[in-house]
Image 1 (cartoon, helix red, strand yellow):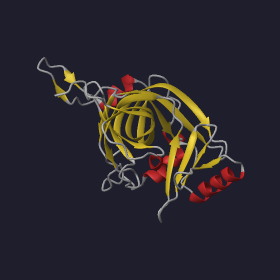
Image 2 (spheres, helix red, strand yellow; image 1 turned 135 degrees about the horizontal axis):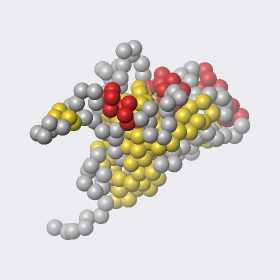
Image 3 (cartoon, rainbow, N blue to C red; image 1 turned 180 degrees about the vertical axis):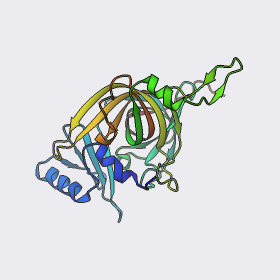
Length: 263
């Protein structure tokens, strides 16, 4: 497989491109039209397009950081249990998320606006908006096609002789970036998810289309951002997404976990 990086792929998931000249022109356009906001707490700018596409730039230090993000509406309530490094190896730029009622999943996600958030004492209960950026995915038209390919050879067989395969809702955090396996990103995750809704968006500056798939996953619903390269006429409600994504969250509220008993 050809080696590539998230910065090659993620811009297309929100209607931009990996051409930094275009990114610079977009920032210039945003500043001239008063839609580029600059944080007073950090050297950071962000532009939110009417399509929900969002560009975040962190300008501290010699290396500029650019995050291609989205103004998501799906929510997740869970426990933040630890920090992990993000795409640019910032130690508080990603978090590990666990289910508050039994740790049924263990998910790493990068944090939007991480540099504006003071380092929190973990664990915390939090409400977050959650979405994912498509990195390397396939979309099957329905569960029948999914089973015919993914489960063509079963994982194992039950004592009763029943073949056992993968379900259409599945997740395993890998950290592995397909095509560049020597580099690890904690938030990179392999998922199976069922499409519940398909929306077509158009970026108002570039006029590029991108797609928002509301999906049912292990953590509940999340929005999956996809460039046109992943889409075809068979993508619809009931389709199954399989592949590598990077989860992102915007932390809306966070609160300390109170001990219910004192020992």
